[in-house]
Picture 1 (cartoon, rainbow, N blue to C red):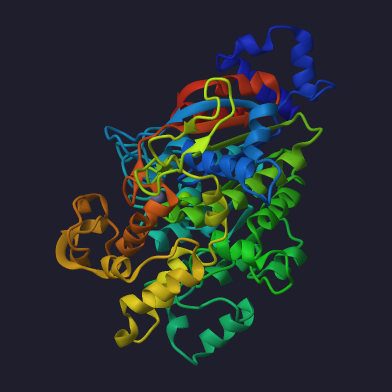
Picture 2: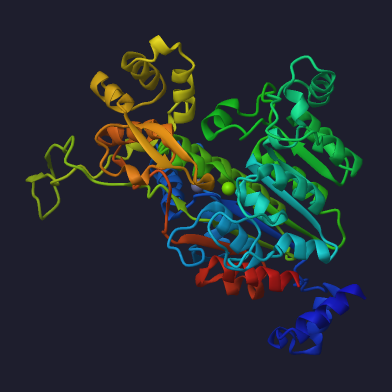
Length: 538
Ligand code: MG
Ligand code: ZN
């Protein structure tokens, strides 16, 4: 009866074309043999995943001497589903941030920069997760960043600014998605946990198992973990607890801030010593819990650190992030096999970094005699270095992310933070060795006073000397990573436009019954594909 009522609502809401005959109506109501009623909606977002990032994975799979994947989930989506293109800009600006973008594709409404769950006028914008919840569906959020970070937050919170993560945590708990699995425990802990040796700290250490750094970022004594348990959540803080959890409401927080980056994730593999669940494990656990709801479910899964690697201009880590995200999509595609009641949409909030391979005048190719009838043994010699495919294996073989490289460097005593030591760390962990002069270049700075994005505070940072486009490097000392990327570019042919986002339109993949995926073909704005989903849910 309930299904019949909701179908009537759909028909009267103006989608008469989709229920023209009585038989079709009957099938939809019964979920009949054709079974074309959409029961479940899954959205998967690669943060910062422009076409270039998808292309990097594609090139790696095609041209690596020994690729770890035979094909990508994006290939699978493109051959079994439909491909469209999504414009991403937010209200009255050319470039979008992850908060505005997630708000737009969660709610279908245009947002202002850095807003969470609000339209550009500042009104609460209901998300598709909240729409689904209102229909009695189970709902879930999975991310490898922080639960309160922009992308998941925009589905379950409404705040003026993305940086209000303490408020976002409280609101996410109130929204009460059935499954929430991610990092970022720091916004869920009472501030009293910061007091070494306190009873509260010991209690939370015992609860979390001692594997996560317990530093609270909260300004109050709210223990959101305890509040979640009272609200009926089964809490988990590591991989084995997640595997063992049996409730139908799960809150899992597996890291102080972000979860393992792509390279650390690859290195940890499937070994028993890996403490955090992988993105694929969180995704399949979420599916197994949510699929029990007879009203169907909505799930958003984010590969959130593609963006973080790209902000660092760290192409090797970004490749590992793309593999991580592709693996998570594969889990969903395998789960969907043989089902015709589920719509899967895979897209991105924006491209990050203005990434690409470019040709250069460095290390030019040697002339080679060619036998072909036009050459007949004459030398073939292109003018430029168009980028050698071996570069893909060298990128994959990076052993430590740029974040890891610089945190190792910063953990040295100040007197040891020398160009020599930076060179040593870089050359031990990447396949693009730098010279001492280049290490010096990375560490060269000048004092630069500027306004940070967060509420207009005046801030002073040491910026690299002689950097012509420093206005496009907004993340302070993080710029060392961007300079490292630029000094190895002559070996890698990898170039980047900035340390932040570009306006490049992104891919939009959809899979499910044809009558629902057709709407995702073409060039759509993020708000438009969101409204298609909201129509399906309604
Ligand atoms: Mg994100
Ligand atoms: Zn970003």
